[in-house]
Image 1 (cartoon, one colour):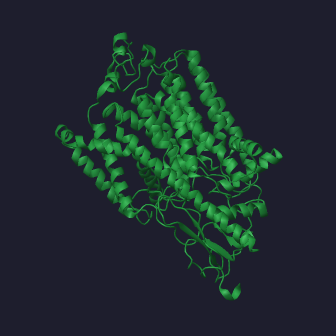
Image 2 (cartoon, rainbow, N blue to C red):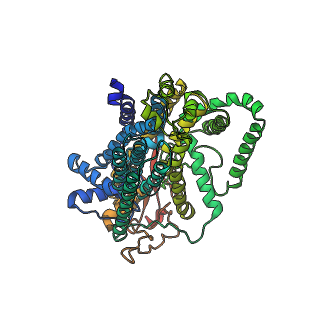
Image 3 (cartoon, rainbow, N blue to C red):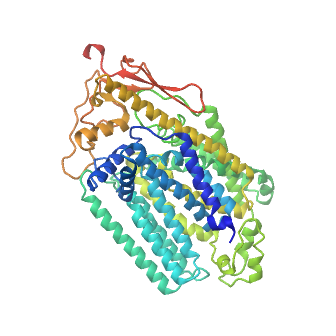
Length: 620
């Protein structure tokens, strides 16, 4: 067996690339990052008492994530960094697993490696991989389930198929306890796999396989019901509604449209490569005269929708359209500090990136409209492969694929069980549809964040690369590797800037405490305030808490002449006299405390945070 195949060196390279990029970014800070502060306090409580206790800011169950975080606390001590390293461990493992999953999906090793790197070295993945948020843990459950389903569909025996189906159910059930939406693997992806196994053709399996798979899926569903029943009985949790009393259609559609419009930006190396396919537009327009009109209609629709919804979404048409984690400022945008942070992506850069993303989308349309090419197309037509005919392979036909750059050398049985693009779509698209539907209540009632796209991106990579192999060319060009490197540099810079910014906020908090000002008199943004609230009051005072009844205590509004806190205003313990600001002139001006600077790669000029007064001088 070749060394590369034995040790899966391309997958190992993807995992090591994530680890190296994260270490270069210096991801440490002595405070919570977005939602991971309350989760870290839960892991700390679990490590010290052995009990899971919610604190008013957790809609996810957290499950195995808490136990892994508690284990890291016991091993390396109680700190935000030690808990976040548990997420990094999962993120590194998932980079390895995703490369193998893409290879199982019929994507050749080179393309699978580049596609994996385009995703795991993106700024969104790199930033989330060093927080204690639930997104990476939930995505790990989804990717593991997908890998199990692909192995089940391509297994050589009924026994192996049953084993992989139970593996997919078991891992998705356990790992999905961190983030409930990941259980769509059991509820949607497993039934899709069983549907494919029940069809007549190379994937068809015996009734014993289908019955065993259905029993595993049913067992997984019962496990989910038991977990949801347990979660509903826990005090200080936040329920997520599946239905909304009133659906603002325009607002909901706009939020979902901007989420999907962000996908090309989050996979920029692959999107830019698709842009090159526009070179074949001239030849395609001669064969299909209506293609130019179709592209013009798509462009017009994009512009009209963006202009029509500009009052619902402030980002108009420029990437990044969601602007939450990955945005024009290069740091997380929802901290609710006073003032505006400095710009990381200029307007010119936004325009250029948006043009590349839109051209890449048009290039994908051109690819899909022209005939299939190479061995990938030939394989779809070989009798006995995964076409609809269901006839048997001839050994000579399979061996003819071995010299192809598009596919690895395959044994006849392996070739017969490789999924076609259509079958891959049957496995993946129901999950995408169900996931999108579950985002509707969130889009209608609250807001959608760009991190919600994380679970969709592996599916987008798999389908995009299969389409590229089938309709464009067998191998991604070398330009893809260069673009992955550029995006990785940006990801490292943004991750570094984000944590440097949080370190600066922690330094300001320490400076104020040294001056005798308690944390309860400082507005240091949502992340810091939530930890102070939990440590003082025991939980975050949120009106959505159902159990125990009357847990929420209304908070009196601040004085009319006080500077208002931005964002969440339900804190009972926070009564700010001072606040952290990007602008020294915000509120009632700069307070007599030294500002703190933080580094901003690749810029020479650092960012600066100031302490400003929240009350007029006469009331201090």
